[in-house]
Image 1 (cartoon, rainbow, N blue to C red):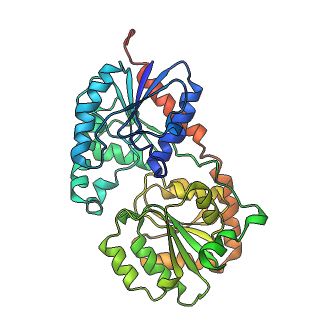
Image 2: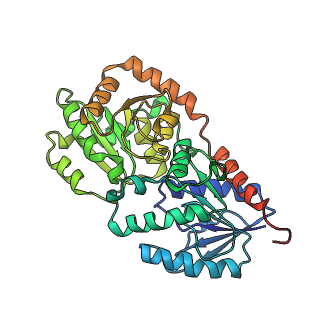
Image 3: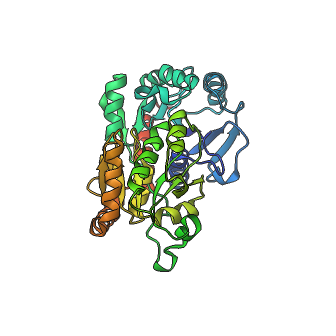
Length: 379
């Protein structure tokens, strides 16, 4: 079988959640199935590290997809020709984008529908593209994979897709993550906060990550706790007016540290050395940092919203993401109660065992197999 794959998010040094999903699943699938040929379609020169095996053929299809206009060109002009040229039997798209102009059966991984519920969180051109095209992608897909039961139900309700067309495949946790050995504890604190304890928030600075309210909540919480710090890890994609206003209004801004994007090893150090993760995003299809923190034995503060209770279960302190006071109270509970932190850390370690990239890759391959089983003989 010849399986074409959208690998445009496999970018060295720039892997975000969907990019990690693609990398971790594809490298396992290609290794486990040497009998099949995989054609990786990149939209710019690729890094050899992302050509996962001898059964992978890398192909560069210009133009680089940096804008919705270029999405249309790439998926509806360049991709159909390439699928014909390489005689693809199936097209797999880990970011959910599909071609509307190919008869090749397509598998879409739709991680979440945040753009349907909070369209103003995105620049208008992107929001319009997603809301115009993703309903069509969902209808056209031979099969849909998503990363939580919450997202599955959301796709069913929002797009009217039959539930038996959608498979839930949870995200995994990178091999780099785990509890710090005793000899390494405190190193990240020394580097980033001068040895002071800190809450950590992980994720690109997108509006839905709720950084504006997190800053306000930390400012309120920190008023009577002069040792507390907040470390925010992630690239500033959209530093919007709400975040600017919250930052400008802080009394304790000097205790907030922005690290930008971190590599896996340093991210592990910063996450595992934290007093707790504060992940108060108001919309998530899964929430990989929550699973990573649990695997590190770090207590979790999470928003009681969308998929996060499904992922964290009984291993988190929950808060209302739209209520600054609720977030501040959750931080105070974590700070003031060492026994609670210990219980949450143990519960998180146990729960994290269910989230492995091996299981994710197996689930994704099963979905591809369901489509392959429907192909006519000789295809």
